[in-house]
Every structure is written in structure tokens, then in C-alpha cells.
Length: 181
Image 1: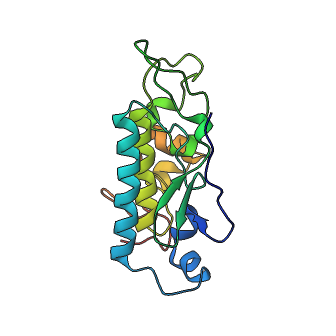
Image 2: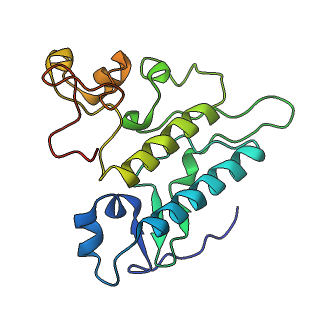
């Protein structure tokens, strides 16, 4: 085992509180500028890349399992869900995660039987977190219009691959109302 550092309330905030201008404003203090958001994104990428270099995958990377310090240092939570390497025999399976951060190819997979590495799904989840950071909390496949009218959930839209920012068509497929350009 190992001893984890105690996280004191007030020293860190959940990542989701930094994804919209309104939530950032509610935190008080000086405004977080665009370049500071870029710094946070780079630091989060570095943490995930470092874990991957050692054969680990986060598996449950989402906006509630990342805490951020006042100095914009990311801290990963819920580490008991990591996919851990097995010496010479692949890795221990990871059975959990937030489907809102899974790539389309994992949405219909039984994770108890999934023998593959979850590093690719970490990179996908990281992409969503970065998207949220710079797109006012929205997710890549959040959309509206006739092309997605029959799709009830974000997972359904993700599975269908309807990405509204690539070539928006008014009334057919477009980002949510009020979304940044």
C-alpha cells in the first residue's frame, strides 16, 4: 500500500468548475485567462502521458475525477479504477468508467471481457476534457437538429458520430444554442 496526500477542502476544485466562464467567476479571485487554461490543459496531458509511459490507464478520466489546485496543478482522483500492468501478462482489467467520456467503440463493450488496453479511451476522454475546457463546458457530440432528433442520449449521438462543429447545417445538425464558435 501507500499513503496518499490529504486533500484539504478549498485547496482544490473539481475540473468541471473550471469549464465554464460562469463557474470560474463563482470561484472568486482573479479571472483565469486563456493562457492559464492552456497551461492546465498541457499539465493534464502530461499527467496522462506519464501514466501511459509506465503502462497505466486512468479508465475513469472525467470532469469529476480531476481536481485542480490554485496553481492549476491537476490531481487525479479515484485511482482504484486505474488499469494496472501485470508483469509480463498484459494488465489487470478496468471495469468502470463514465460512459460520457468513452469513445464510440467502447460504448457497447462488456468491460469485464475487454482484454485491450484502455489507453486509447484515456486519450479520447482527455480530448473531451480539453474540449470542455475551451468550449464552455460543452461536449463534442452535443448537438441539435433533425439529424439527431431521434437520438435520446449523448451516448447515442456519440455512437452515431454526429459532430456538429465540423460542418453545421442550420436545423439539421448544429451545436447547442449559445455554443461558442
